[in-house]
Length: 348
Image 1 (cartoon, rainbow, N blue to C red):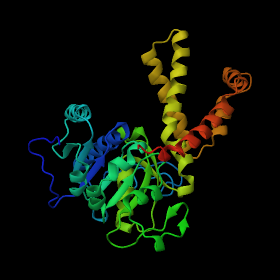
Image 2 (image 1 turned 45 degrees about the vertical axis):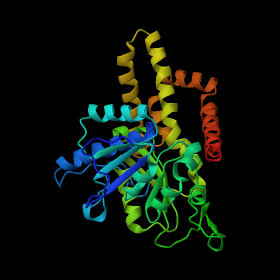
Image 3 (image 1 turned 180 degrees about the vertical axis):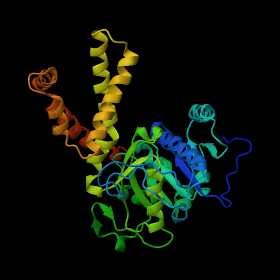
């Protein structure tokens, strides 16, 4: 175990969130929450993020800045970041130090059971193939009883997690609803929520989709909503939609980065500095996205720019000749198919 000298693992009067697996996504969520907590502590009660998007509202798709009264949510005030290797622990320590993080984060190496025992809520962020090793230990399974477990594992379903935890009984699991097992609804059962944020959590601009098991309480649902609203937007979906949304929300930041990278190559070939071109291209993509978030349809954005006889329509025709539209659609379908089997590759 690796902890700072003054860190304590007991819960006390505070609320503790343990993150099992602080890789790229787990760390992004942690830092996003820390950033939100820092801003929240200096924010006046009247300060609210303004959402100009049409139809925005809690769990109706776009919820960034949706107000949540403090008394409605038992927010975590301490965090435990659980990692496997000394290298990961050192990396996380350095990142926290660089961010001048307050002493509310404990780094734990190689002791999932103790980290879960000290938690009120657990965020599961290990690799999908490491799921059984991460939560299958008897001490971890026992510690998860009666707690909220939020999984951000691509391709891993709620029934798969329930099977490892053995929190279902044969007479009670015959029925299924939208792919989620009807689990033991006793007070000792683990409430499981499946979520898929993305790496933009680090800058509090994630797009997160969530689905829950039937025994999730209203207070637990409010906590999950608050947690992911703190780092972006939230959309409630069914379990059957999850793999497609994993690809659409979780994977496409890499698609967009590839598109920007391609634009930069062209810009450099035309004599622009790469650093300046990156700012221009990224801001342009951001502006186009904001238009569509303000209810502008993609085809209308395109039509407004592609004036008759202009340069834009010539560029669009070149993209169509190279089958960009079909290539992107096929890439999303392929990504969805891959996401659907990630949870089946359990480590032996």
